[in-house]
Image (cartoon, rainbow, N blue to C red; front, side, top):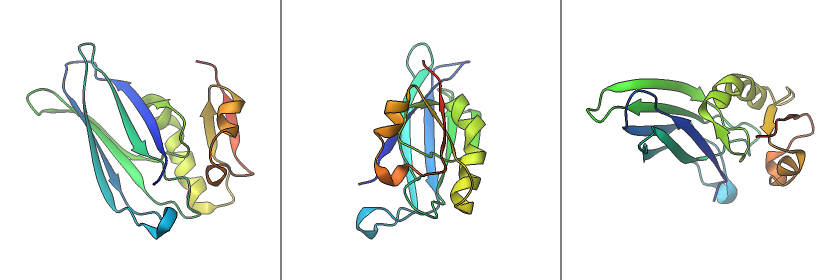
Length: 144
């Protein structure tokens, strides 16, 4: 079973639904190939939401990405963010993920490039499974 990261955010204009769609493939324990998955959450009264999404930083050629979209109660699309790459099983907000995802996806494809991992403390990074840590990771410690 692959690891998951909790991604959080706030839907500003209205209560509604958040839909995350996994695209691509990666090889996890047991050789299971995940091609697509969809995860949904309903926002709370303040527009807050959280989703547990598969982390795809485990494979040498992790090519999966997430698309996250927010919808109003009337099924009108309020936002959509594409090509998000989850590098490690650390909790993150959608805004932080948008800022780091492009660099992480490039690093996963190129193997030797540095990934930027944002963590509340260095011990949380060290607690990740060994398959999710790489010698060339750049860990930004940002207390919450």
